[in-house]
Amino acid sequence: AGFLGLMASMETPTDIITKKDEVIKSCKKKIKKPRYAFQTRSQVDILDDGYRWRKYGQKAVKNNKFPRSYYRCTHQGCNVKKQVQRLSKDEEVVVTTYEGMHSHPI
Image (tube, rainbow, N blue to C red; front, side, top):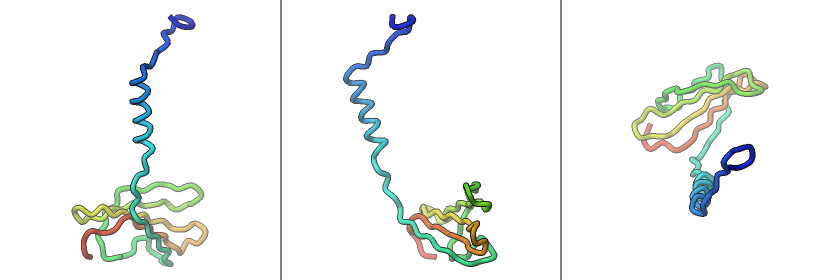
């Protein structure tokens, strides 16, 4: 028994190697998709870019009174996402950020 009756767990060298491999796997860099951001002066948040989008989320952002909206392209197999948010310092400006490249024509 260990200190105050607690059992000290002993790690075998193979346990340490397994944990090391897990850390290495979790640290590998994720391949990032290309990102493009556009600032547009507009009264409406949703701008027609020719593609069809499905909204899948919205969240409040620190230091901004406007929420950020999250969209995915509805075309099957296309993994493009976009984020739309209005600037708090200039309420007429909408920032649209696209992540990825469309795998289909408009």
